[in-house]
Image (cartoon, rainbow, N blue to C red):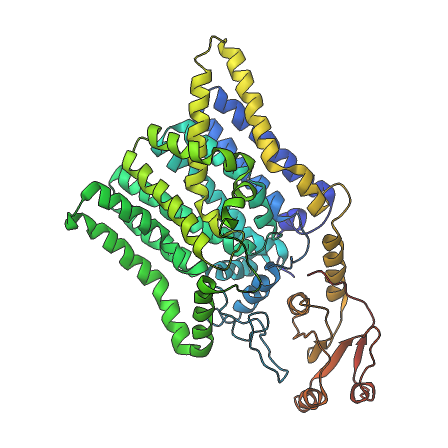
Length: 527
């Protein structure tokens, strides 16, 4: 864990309270300035300070947890670390030295469980800033900041500055987004990248319709291809939106579809080579990965089950309590007030499609619908802007109006961030969450191990062998080796390092080996 710049030593993975508080306090100060400039109609300043606050608050989220979170951050972190040495060969067990079946996604040698782009981003961040948890989350911070601007700009084109501003503010204040940025919410960096690239592709499409400039076709194709390279074919979502728009606007004038075809070709150029490479170099693993992706449609994968209305229940958790009650009227106001009626119809249709589509899929994952952040926050922003305009018609002094809306916007932001829950989960100022304490404890043990380079670690609790490999750089397993595995390791000149079993007897073939390294520290299980 070297090559860290001074700033990252300061704002990185130390649990020092002051570092977190400084980032948070300055971020909140910029938010207050941004809201002040918004209510006083100074658009440029409101946007600049909103973007500045987003950078600081997202950095704050990235430093909340000074360890690898269990689902699924530790896997992404380890594979990305291994990609630094061989970018086109994603591995979980980079050194599969033990003779065993590497036949499940949590113990694969070649790890194609996820598309690789977001892990390539992390590997690049490691190269620049060192292998640490902050560098792991930094690409998510960067992409989230880009998404803030994409949401703002899309809202402004479809409505006005206020619509864009409110939509971006809703995104910046998202508690769920903070959980993804911190690695606490499952699928973490993967979902951040997927959400961002889909949002960027939708923004590029909106810009293309608005400006008629062909360069946006390239951006649409590239960002959609990037989305596929993060989380597969739902990355084509922009083309559903574009297709609906074209059918409504162009009827059967096929000449108008040439730009869509060009964008799709660019997407294929971006996303297809990796699929072909995998099928050629890793045919068995690639086919298994594609089969697992398909299985999500027809069966429950890894216990992720739920009723057909699961994703409707998740609206309040992902987008906020208000969204659950205001989404339908927001979509109606979006259509009525939009500067581009056909675009609004296409976007609303896409929202409906996504919810129907994921409701029909048997496997339910909490973050599936977060890809709709741009259209949903823009829709809610249209409603807020409409309410503000209606209230402004009452005979209230201009100053009173500004003060009232300043207070309301601040309260909205504060309520959505849910600082109480952030504190309870991440131990910012109060009592630490049990898993927080356990994962810090385990990290300390792994980093304190001074093992020879030919060691292989055994009897690591649960799936914490993943963190063990990340922090030590050595292969690690959650079982005691059999006699056959032990003899095979001896032939390979490897030494066994064993976490001391509690209540179990160490086999004689290990006890009698003078080279055995017995680790007396006890790991805590947090899964």
